[in-house]
Length: 287
Image (cartoon, rainbow, N blue to C red; front, side, top):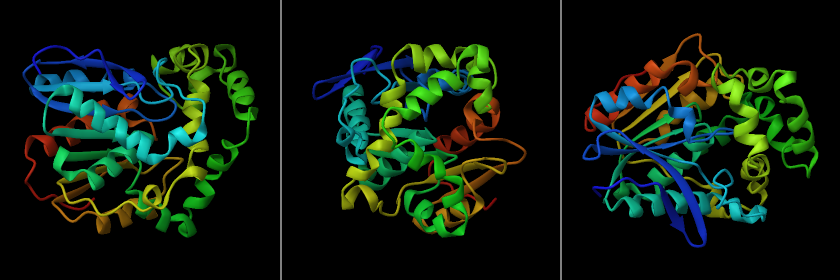
């Protein structure tokens, strides 16, 4: 595709896209996490553009104003995967290099596992392979993931977060986000009306099918980037992920970093992506 993509559709939903970098560069799709938007990658993409990559970052389901279904079942994993395939189709290419952080990493794992013919390489950030995440639950991950159950409550999470994360109460800085992301968090998520859609990613989990819950092994070259001070994701799932990749694999640890790697450690994130997407058949080492 030789023109910029500003939006794409999946059924009746329209998704906003930030498409930047060399228009003829190798396409690299970036999936944001919770509760962020495509702008979460803004410190990373200039580093990727320098290496010749074209970056395509969508506002995902629940975040894009024209793609905010109200039903929880419309946020099943299969629906989220379908959005990414629709984006790749809209680009008019057979394959892309795929990157995801947080919930975006979960979707990226699922897309790579179920559609390996559409993905050249995978770089997953923070969240381990979904099956490794489940295996890690009795090994300490359950305690870290308590908030997932809390977010399934109706209305109360919106009420609490919309007050607790007001700018005068600390805004995104209370979540650990660095500036300038912390300062604009409230407008990006709460004022824009994206908060309920963002929470619906968690609320859709009770409606997951068997296929949604059972993510197969990934068979494409993969890098997994994890930070050892991540409050939400523990070491058990990170270490178990290697058993769920049957392809060249590298596990990288960013020492002394928290969960918000694209915003706080863009150099490390870009280096992991470039090393993987730039040499997709190379074997990696352990962390």
